[in-house]
Image (cartoon, rainbow, N blue to C red):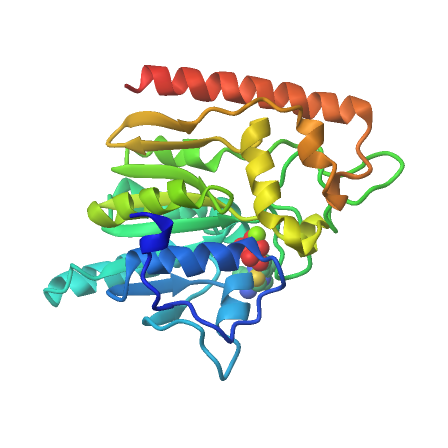
Length: 296
Ligand SMILES: Cc1ncc(C[n+]2csc(CCOP(=O)(O)OP(=O)(O)O)c2C)c(N)n1
Ligand SMILES: [Mg+2]
């Protein structure tokens, strides 16, 4: 489906309270247009919960269930099995959580559901920190980034570990579908959500969603920054369909400094730190490309 052919009807609609330029809000608005009304949503504590379901308002036009931080995939499992018993397994169960709720605190429920090949779509929107509670680092925060728990001090400046490779962890579960997507590449995003919708079993999509508030960038630059992440190799777009891995877009290998420059969270980084990140990006891309070649 082309972007212009997406239905006009909004299933994640006006009245939500996301910050200006919120990448997660762009992702959810568009993915709901692709998934359609026969969808049930399971969502733990995160920005999306707060801005999409601010009591007494609800921006969702489909059944929406708030669950505990740790157990999105476990609750989605129960709902998916219950719908099967009711003969309604055409209803898509979507678990959607942030990077903190997925890569760190929800990973045990997620891993179990993936390994059992539960019939659901799990979406991690990756804003690379625990944003809702005031910008704390997560396993998905990139190297060098300032957060309130990786402060800029004399000894250490920003996060000293590299980003956890969640899509690779999910591919290791041998599930039917794993994809990375970005709000900077909406056509590719639509295609991946359409594909996930058409499949059965466990499907995982990780969407790159810049956060102007936590990343300290201009609210008008969300899409531009998402595109720069792909161009520099900071975010690789690919998909794994029944074990076959395809790179969706080759990075231009624009110097990573171009991606860092517009974001205040990287402002303090030394030349040496930028070089460490650049080296990591080169190695990551090499590994992603080789992995795709091996998984043909
Ligand atoms: C068990 C538990 N621990 C901590 C919290 C507090 N908490 C609520 S949302 C949140 C951050 C969520 O981060 P993430 O999953 O990345 O989503 P984001 O806010 O970035 O959208 C935290 C720590 C909680 N609700 N439950
Ligand atoms: Mg987050």
